[in-house]
Each structure stands twice: as C-alpha cells, then as structure tokens.
Image (cartoon, rainbow, N blue to C red):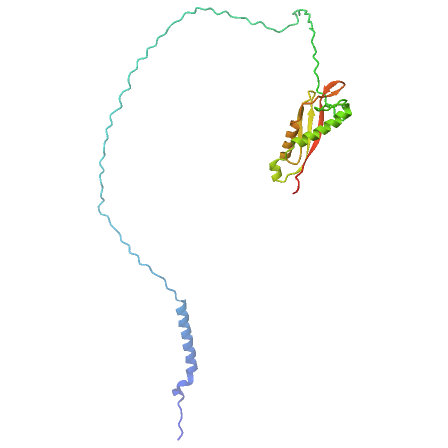
Length: 242
C-alpha cells in the first residue's frame, strides 16, 4: 500500500517566502529603531500669583528747618573829597618844524679840515730762514751769516738732546713716530707760534715743550731791521729695542 502526501500538509513548501518576509520585517524594525529620535523634555512649573489686595506703604515726610544766615555787617563808607587848587601854571611849548622849504635861505658855512696825523704802523715781516740776510743769532754763536747758520743748527741739535724726554705713557703704549715742529723767532728774538704735527698728542706735547725751552736769541735782520724768521725742525721719537 503506497502512502500519498497531501500537498496542503507540506509545511516547508513556502519556507523561502516566509524567510524573505521575516527578513524584510526585521530590516524595517532595525531601520526604524536607528532613525528614531528622542528629545529631553524639561518640565517647567508655572504658578500664577493672584494679588487681590495691594499694599501701600506711606513714607513720612521729614521737614528740616535751617536757620537763615546772619545779615552782612553794615559798613559805612566815608568819602572825603579834597579840592586842590592849581598853583603852578603850565606853559604850552610850540614845536617848530625842522623841515626846509623852497623859500628858506641856507646859510653859507665854511668847513675847515684840520691836519690829521698819520701814524705809521709797523707790520710784522717774516722772512724765511734760508733767504734772510742775517739769521737769528743763537747765544754763543759768532761769525758771518753762513757760520751763524751752521752754529744755529748745531745749537738746536744740542738743545734737543739736552731737553729730550720720552713720554712715559707713549713708551708704555709703544707709540713712536716723527713730529714736525713749526715755530717763529719774532723780531724780539723770542720763540712764538709753536705748531706741531705728529702721529700722537703725547709726542706733539713733548715736542712743543722742548721748543718752548729755547733761549732768547738775537733776532734775524733784513736790511738792518729786525724781522720774524719762521723755522721748522723734525723730532724723531723712536724706542730702542732691548
């Protein structure tokens, strides 16, 4: 005997359909669960106060009484008017015009010129040492002009060697160099207008000091008249190597 299945009693015939429907339902619920938004709700309580009676407070008014200020003191002003009679009479002065018109006559005046004395002013003439007729005479020098020149230069060298002193500050700083000294032997035989030019102020001051110690000389002469004679000499400052 063969067994026959009832097609209506087959449970698994629509299983795929049920699975698809169930899957779609789950996806829909999942989507709705993810997209659902919630908001925090704050609860506020509103109370309404009903005023049936209005309270009115009366503020008392305070009156302050201030006494009036005292009246100002009465001052009595006494004016004394003194009448002074004019004693001195003032005479009016008439100022005459000093302008000259066309009708005015000009008085002729004789102007005399007095003799004016003209004083001769002697100019300080300077003649170079190389061309002067008679050079300045150093104390102790004699002879003609050539001998006086040679003696003058020799005495100058002796004077420099005698009074030469190397500045201590320049020696410590190892300052060396040549200083050119320019000076004038004026018409009275004195040394004046000393000027120096060198590498350092210390050396220039020492050179000026040496020249200022020169003795008074017999002035140079040009046409038998004393004149100023400019002169220049170099002074060499050099330290000896030990």
